[in-house]
Amino acid sequence: MNRKLIITKLNEKIITAVIENEKIAELHCTEKPETQAIQLGNIYVGRVKNILANINAAFIEVSGGVECYYSIGENPTPIFTKKIGKKPLCIGDELLVQISKEAVKTKAPTVSSKINLTGKYAVLTYGDTRAGVSNKIDKSEKERLLELAKAYATDSYGVIMRTNAKEADTEVLEDELKRLTERYHVLTEQAKTRICFSCLQSAPKEYLTELRNIYQEGLTEIIIEDKTIYEEVREYLSKEQPEDLEKLRLYDDKLLPLHKLYSVETCLSNALKEYVWLKSGAYLVIQPTEALTVIDVNTGKCISKKKDDEAYLKINKEAAKEAARQIRLRNLSGIILVDFINMDTKEAMDELLNVFERELKKDPIATTLVDITKLQLVELTRKKVRRPLHEVMS
Image: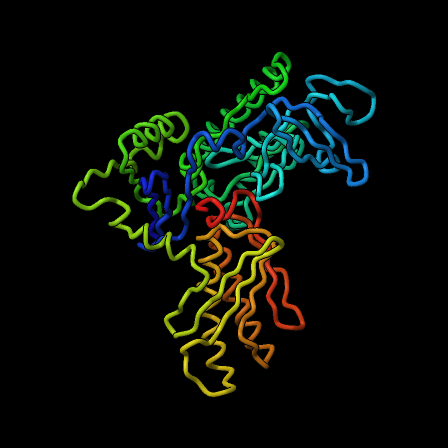
């Protein structure tokens, strides 16, 4: 696998693209700074505004007039900076919270007391004291990383080793773990003296977070077209990921803009369309709704016999690969249903699901193939963090 990360400007927006084997695998759009006041990963001293006992939840104000959803049951060990009453949570309590999900349409942002400090190789997790390792790492390597995670986990926080920790030098991993633990202690000390609505940590801009989230295996270049962004990225890498500085390159060809070189504009336009054509002549119809996303597979221009399971399996396998790519490219999340072409044999369906699951595992965001219904609808879920591409672009 050959990977590149490119950052370019297009129509006054900053576009980050992950290129895998010379094909765009991910597209992220950074909005204007004024629209990003409440950003994913920001940490605040918030105040409990309202408690909804019937759903065991609360709304916490983190900034003037900005209220966020908070699940009481999922946050058993909050860090209070001001406690009003004896109940586990009272209106007026002030506590440390982190934005864990962005606002989506009519839904408010979600906050959590489980503070996560994320690095390139590891995540420090307050409120979850487990030591763990990414499931995408081989068993032999897992043992080394698990021992390292256990050495840094405490009664207050745990450590999860990310996929990027695979085959990384122990010294590099320990350096990052020390930075994360130091950041945690500074944060919790600062919280004691800060007033309500203080932002204790602002998350890096989205194009900077991609530098730590991209799979490192096969990453050869980080190419940036804008000089200001290049300097910003250089400064970030110098502090957080010095080992990646040698991959950084400023693109300065005035005759061929970076987005033209990698066909970013065309890919972005296609990723916003409802129809996706396949080489076989079949096509996908991708329709996001309020509750879930539906992907329908149609034979289209593909000519075959009326009922040919072998031909249908071939089309379905092609569709599975493209559906997995489109889910990642468009940043679709939540519940997703895929309606493949119906096949009669269990063997054919099992083969299709194996192909689909293998393709979904290429996605850095947790994606789970759940089951297949009696109507042969394939159910899957993808972790919902940021807004999908079509919402950001609209």
